[in-house]
Length: 519
Image 1 (cartoon, one colour):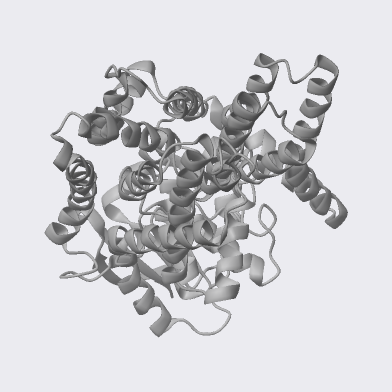
Image 2 (cartoon, one colour):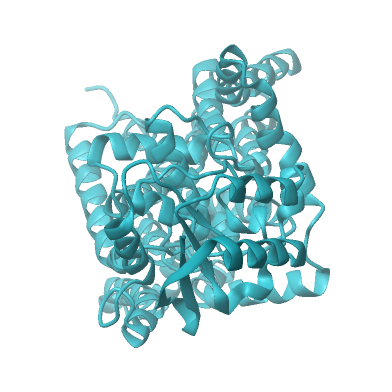
């Protein structure tokens, strides 16, 4: 009788699951999807969570009507996020619920990719599920309830890293070098993440290292083959961006694409916050994630016979965390949602650390201790997100300000009439389904502190907008001071001459939203 293979579950763990394994994987995904729905349920209440999400919604809505990003609605991000938004609208309808459902699916997919990465490295299913649940729970923190770029790109990077972890185990255990198809597949995943947000470049470099370094270490790869794999990987990473650029060039919109996709981000990069503020914001993010970080410290506990898979996984996760920190710092701004880039490796480390901590308990309660730690983690994250919503009541006890303003505008607007949002929520264009009188719909990029990032004469553009005589002008008087002085003077003059105040409504944070109607 032939001897059993020494690693009978390896093929299963590395991506060719048997029927039973596939069934278990399906169950894991359903658990993560249900957890994401429950833990992110409060995201379906407010209309606005993050202004970037609102901008992508306006871009996607315009795109479905033939107005391409950069050309119809300007931004300084790649087209990946509005493309995913547009696809979601096409499938599920143009609604805010569709956007938040996209976020739920992306978070569940990332959690599942972490689970598969753990399995590919040879660690247990419980550790993989714990890593996925840790990510799902903590993804709601740091403004993560918004379906933002960091949420949307995470499944692609996590899946690419899972492929890298599988390649690591093949090289170290079976003596198999990574193949071209594997490297190209991982590169395409990273390339898709790059057309969502290019700051993932350090993570893309790490994925390649995880794919090939174990093979080099085992002398399974020669330098000529390594060079070929590097070229194939680079080409695969660049392919999605090159394809998008080619489409814009064929449309005759190359200059608009180049400005929004390359030149404007360079302008933005020069507006970074001071070092002291960057440190303060980083410490705030660390405090928000203090519980998973404390669990992650458990990987430092000594073990008499550490599992090789745990060692590989911990080292890869630490490298992932370092690369993620570089990605967070690249824009120089340190908004809370930027720190979501480091959440997947923190979730992996928290799962590994929690398992070591649980083994300190009595043998009969190890599993209960492990489950309890992640129950507390999920509950803490849920409370941090939901309790402020219950306190302030927007979307529950109190009406949602953007929805209320949009309802007032929709009741008064006639077909073809336009609105202009001076310094409030750009989502109003989406909620009223009106065509903006400018392609610069993000107020901070036209009348606010980031007006220089567009590279245009903002005052001339504002004068052009006002000359079109929008039916309604919407402004937030509580944040009037954020409008540039020259824009304030121009708007004040036009409002006094040509407009009457139509209504005042409460905005967020005690501010007042004013609706001005053309005389």
